[in-house]
Image (spheres, rainbow, N blue to C red):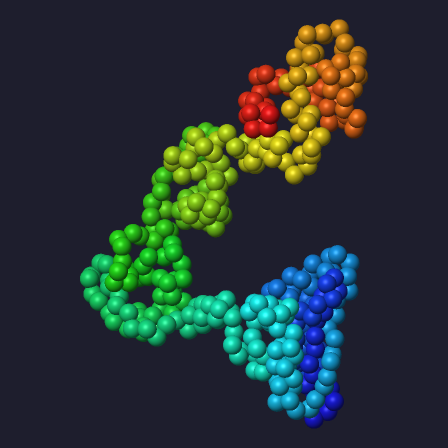
Length: 338
């Protein structure tokens, strides 16, 4: 075996904390693959975070051997030495004890492995299925049913892995509760802007209205409030006040000032004071040319910071573009923040 084919043990050390966070065994360029494509989620997130913060993070090779069994023993020893974080024994992000890559996996890893195996191979557990149209029954594994129906096993496995799938080719699990697949169910959709209605299956609706099927699916599942202005009947009253439509037909969410990520403490103070500014302005309209800072001072507010946030709102008040006393949004904000 050439030196380049030797096995080695490597460590990843967190440059921010100085702690050893991963122990691995590899050959050739294996240890560098974690930088951009680590199978360990926590390690990958830490690497990305440190790189974004300007740190350098690289694996450190600690020993090399031409005996793979020797390498496995060294890997296990180092994992034992530093301790696994998921077991509360140390700082390592490793999910196994090392040695062969799969020994003593954590509960989370076991669950992920089981899910992956099921999605790929199905289950050999003997189950009872029935056909809701013919009442025919079938006993066997999910793979057995897929062979019996001459369809892909992935279709049958959706009965277990996809909550929206209740039947496959008319076949259901014996404990079937009578509900139908979401994509076979008819829904009543309504457009919150013009009141147009559509009744039908979500796929027909998506095709007719030229909408993304995944978007409509998320709407039906309750994960999306609207699909370009379309909602499920009964939701229009709650959704309509939260969205607007441009002249080109694009729909966007209304963002109140206090919901914007740029809304600062100064913005909050300015928004709260807008009502008082308006009242002061209307009481003494002769001070049209007075500075915002002077008016604030006259109101007993000695604001020492920047006043540009106040100026923007004050100018809107002067131009009658913003009238807090008649602005429902401002009233709502004032009640929440006074």
